[in-house]
Amino acid sequence: MFVRPEKWNLLSAAERREARFSSWMSTADKAFATAKAEQTYRRHSQRMADIIALKKPDRIPLLPLIGGFVHKYGGITPHQAMYDSRAFARAYTKFVEDFLPDYNMPDPGDSGRMLDLLDYKVYRWPGHGLPLTESFQMIEEEYMLADEYDQFIADPELFYLRVYMPRAFGALSAWRMLPSAFATMELPMMAAFLAPVGTPEVQQAFRALLDAGKQAYDWTRTIGEAETHLTESLGIPSLLAGFSKAPFDIIGDTLRGTRGIMLDLFRQPANVFAALERLVPIAIQMAVESADAQDTPFIFIPLHKGADEFMSSASFQKFYWPSYKTVLLGMIAEGLVPFQFVEGSYNRRLDIITDPDIPVGTTYWNFDRTDMLQVKKKLGGWACFSGNVPGSLLYTGTASEVEDYVKRLIDNVGQEGGYAMATGLVVDHALPENLHAMFKTCKEYGVYH
Image (cartoon, rainbow, N blue to C red; front, side):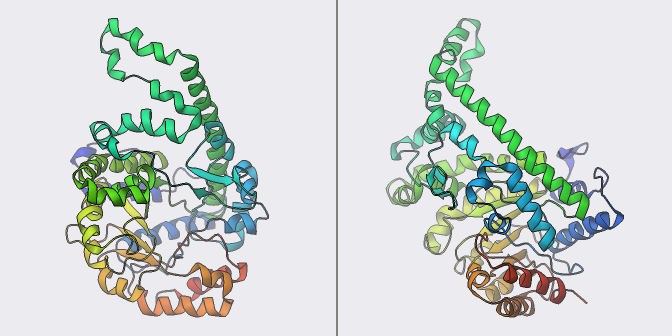
């Protein structure tokens, strides 16, 4: 856990970021197996600090996003990966020991048993609506109805608790009966508040939540122990633990769905704007709480509905960017580094996101299908960037083709620092020899002289 220095509120954003990096990079609380492991940890963590600051480290760091490939390489099914935490931990350990990535960035998903207990409606997963050999899939629905904006805007947290969660989790459907906690402010009102909590339906919902919480605790503890072992035995730092989302994506992904949000932009834009504004402090707080709990300065943010394929540049500037920019500035003010996974293409967004209000050297952008030459032209000297190694190449190409692609990326956009080598997507399917070629080429060809 990150311990805030004294007089935190008096520190500048740069001082807060320095404090967070210093804590994350510290080796004082880690029981390294060897001196070499400690040296590796120092070198890899410094490498990340350097590229965020737009400097040249010793070499270009490796930051591929690896997902289901870990399961296949480790000889387990997606179902085992979600229902057997020890099997997943063994598979992830095998991957790390064989490939030696620069950072621990496991994508363990969630405990399938936890999701079963909650009767989660928003996804299908292996063994729950899908074959045991398939990965999870989101079921996009309108979990907030078009006429519920006023209720959401009045109190987003209460709406999420008493409306969204009963719809999204079958086991928590009784939470719609929960009264406002403000009912506890006077003694004569206490019974009115507590009586619904005493009903069999609500009691059962809380039992399901407690059982699911135990599953989640055991799951994360097992995965965390594997990460700690890899850090202390090999010197590999854990990187992505903090999480948040853009306000537009919270509405478009989670609450209204793609169809719903796109209709709302035309039918009730004022309500969309008001909801986005209400979500800004929530998105910032999500980032701060997860970063503090995991002692990391990096906040993983998947960007979805802002891609070129989803909306026009005019709509992006009007609806998506203003609230998200405020979230970015709020995270930066807290000393955090937004680590943005830019899915799809942002070829028409580059002039917008390179906003002069966002301080130089404070953000990280991992691109999927955006033209990297244009990324270099627009973001070079302003923000760290990575991405673009195609999943299709890793799965259907040859090792020599992967080597050539990685070398071209380094030659074209990676010569001046502030750059990492990464995939453009989360890798589920890849040939091991191709992934080895990506790692080896980056480690050897990506050395700065």
